[in-house]
Each structure stands twice: as C-alpha cells, then as structure tokens.
Image (cartoon, rainbow, N blue to C red; front, side, top):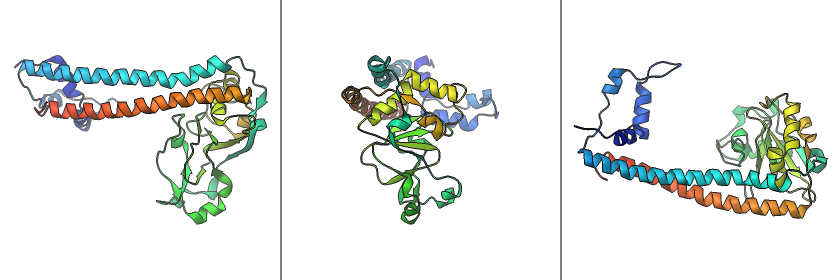
Length: 287
C-alpha cells in the first residue's frame, strides 16, 4: 500500500506520537530511536486518495494557525517599534531613583523560606510572573495572613513596575489592575513610579528598549548576558522623562495593540484546539 508523505508527516507530528517516541528513545545526551523502535510504529493506512484528502485538510488548518502566529508576532513587535519611533532620540536625563517613589526588593534569607509557602493566602510574585515581559500567573505561591503581617513592606500594588534581578534577569512588567494582595520575592525589584513624572508602562518600555537605559545595564553587568542586577544598578539607570501627554499617547497606543493581541491570542488558542481535534479524528477514520 502506498504512503503519502504529507499524511505521514502529520501523523508523526501528533503530540501522542511524539510522546510515544520520547518514551522509547535511548541515549542521555543525544536521544534517538533505534530502527526496531521505528519499525514498531503502527500507522493507519487508508487508501492513498483518502490519505491525500486528510493531509490537505490538516495542511489548510495548519496554514491558518501559521498566519495567526505571524499576526501575533507582528503585534508583539509593534509596542517596541512604536516606542522607538516616538522616543528613540529622547535624552535620558533622569534616573530611576528620581522617578521612583518607592524601590524595594523582596524579603531575603530567613525572612521567607520555601517551607513557609502554603496552598492559599497572600500571593507571592516571583520570576515566573515576569519572565515573558508580560505579567502572567505562573506557579501559584502563597503565605499565610499572619506571615504577611510581618512582610507588609514588600506589598506589590497595581501599576508597580517589576524587574527580575536574579536568575533570568532584566525582564520587566507592569502589575495589572485587579491583582489580589501580593508581595514579591528577593528575585524581583519593585518600583512604584511617581505618576506625576512617569507612566508605569512607559518606564517598563524604557527599561526594555531605550538605548541609553540598556547601555547602562550592559555596562554595569559587564556584558549583554546579565548575571545579576541589584537595586543600586537599577536606581542609577538613566531614563527619559518626556512630557506626560506624550507618555500617555504611547501608553494608549500600546493598550490598543494589547487589546488586539488578546483577540488574536484567543483565536489562536481556538485554532490550536480545533487542529488537535482534527488530528485526532483524522487518524481514527472520523474526518
């Protein structure tokens, strides 16, 4: 019986098949499948014309997902390109210390131990909340209300700018509205901005993309791969402070982009779910 190449490719790309192959791979440093393991794969083989029909349907569904990802990538880059277009030549005449009404890291050492995390209570924000340069809920960590009473000075507020200073350093997010009461860990520096001088979203953008700000970080950490930051480096970081009207214009543009990203992201999630369903049905003879 003939086997269509595209049909075979789609079959082998199924998550269940990839996982199955991973469990049978050998070699710690360079996992590989032996010829006997490959030969053991059982592939449903309908007539060749049916294989081509299935492959064509999955190709079309895959192309829609690819285009949606391309749109999302374009939107991801739009905030940065907008910042450069508006503020590339803006001089960095202030420092973070000048425009931060409060700058602090989280509790150190014995102030907060991993053994003190509980299943519910007051949230604790860490690297996983900032690593993508967009605030996300990752692994949920909590402390008891009683513990929080002793660590209140580390409370994170909506609008605070969070910067990772250990591990994956140099990532930056703005804390969104509506988060529950939370503190940050020692891996994060939290900045409460002076809103009479700077918009939090603009400060985040400056930290990520302004050439003078980035050069300060590169110079202070002796290279583009940042091993670690500290509050002294962050406080001394030069930042631009254009008029609030221009900052708010930028923030409004980015908010519009973020709204589009959310719509496209939901559509992509639906595309992925549909594609997974099509894959499953295709190789069970139900498509």
